Image (cartoon, rainbow, N blue to C red; front, side, top):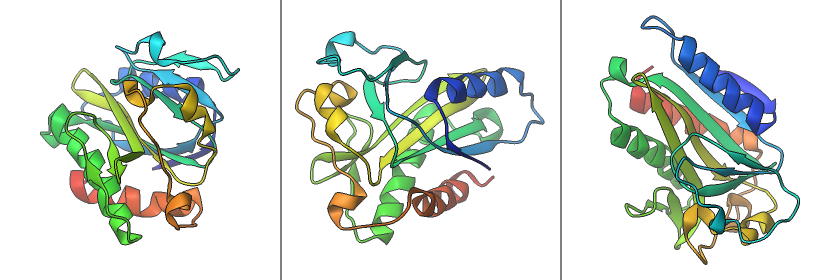
Length: 198
């Protein structure tokens, strides 16, 4: 478990790539907890047309799955660096594990949330509260999930979140839950550890 505090997206992404490239069958799996300064990230198949207008926020073309999303202070980001072969889990199973970790965590705070099969992520009243995306390399995964906790949601208005025009986003603070991002990380990580048994 690594608590990285607030760090630039690019540096953390490169560190995940390095970790995954260097690991072997004996390398312990890791979970990284982080917040990022404002940044838009485009997934491998991300289309720039989903960036609706320039607003000065940096854009990083990432190697995760999915389209475009926004990261910023007040959003919990949890990266899962695990050996899928050792866990005997496939990519779809890992996506479900990430979704369920968020859904079960939100339930603890009295928030009913659900996954959307056609648009990966977690939603509350059709508004997106969590995004997820993974990259699989040599049977290992990295990247993970982000949950909007208590942040400025305005930058989401300048993109089609995850490639969906008009998709609304929400956060715990707007749903009446006021907790620190570090506090939110505790049940999320607990749910992940239970699901993948590391």
